[in-house]
Image 1 (cartoon, rainbow, N blue to C red):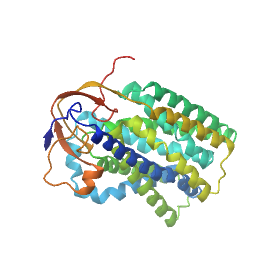
Image 2 (image 1 turned 60 degrees about the vertical axis):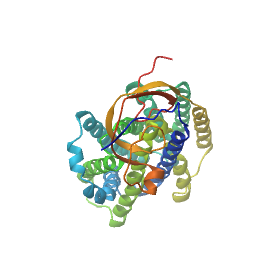
Image 3 (image 1 turned 135 degrees about the vertical axis):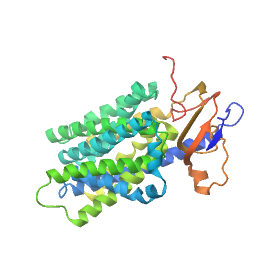
Image 4 (image 1 turned 90 degrees about the horizontal axis):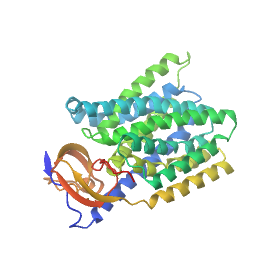
Length: 370
């Protein structure tokens, strides 16, 4: 096991820390692109597959894509070594993000336009920020509160697009976003498993559960093999790869800030909805998107830093070696692992320092009331 102290940023440049943040931001944007594609593509499959069955296939696709890696990595041994706290984090992540979230989303897609649902998904940012501030020491700043208010206002504006069915769709999507907000905060704190392991567990557990429910309520007609294959393929990319990248970004940025960048996914969803489904983008959607963009711009100006104490700890999570917190040695490290980061078990000595930071996995400390 690697063991090292946390670097003192008062004596060294913060440039490495900001490089690590930019890598996390890049990973969050790629995750958003992949997930944004899922909304219009899933909408196209809902005519032939019921929502429970489709949710199961999507997550099963994510799990199957990571199965070869899981079989080689000794995942069972690592699961048995998790402490009670991290086991609860994994269980809560599966129940909220893997089972409840996608089912409510797909029922919402059945009741509303794909383009509107793509923008409503930004409520996930609000849920993540509020739950993080209330329960997970993910500090909600004044800029964050203004951003949350702006996104709620934009989502309410969108709920009137399409009449009563659209209101119902908005409510269902809001419930899905609440479930994913809880999931985001839990997965950001899992420190006994790397992102691939967390995603494989969620994919297989949630996929098989929703698939079983979908088969029980399905009509006598079964979905075609091309539809099943398409659902598994969408799940592998838009859920599997996307979730791995999002968890990685959340461990490097904190759940709320990672969700801020991930919230660009509806933009990709809107574009694809017009291309794949031929849906039009109306004035309300443009106005809501503009309000959301303004809200994001306010949050970008946020800065946070103060003296804080890191206790001695041993954990597993994604990290880079140039951000002042990971000074342990490796016998050999690939270029990809050096540039994009990597995950393994490592330790930290107790250390106190002062530098700009976000509520990543190392900075979930208490703050005095502001």
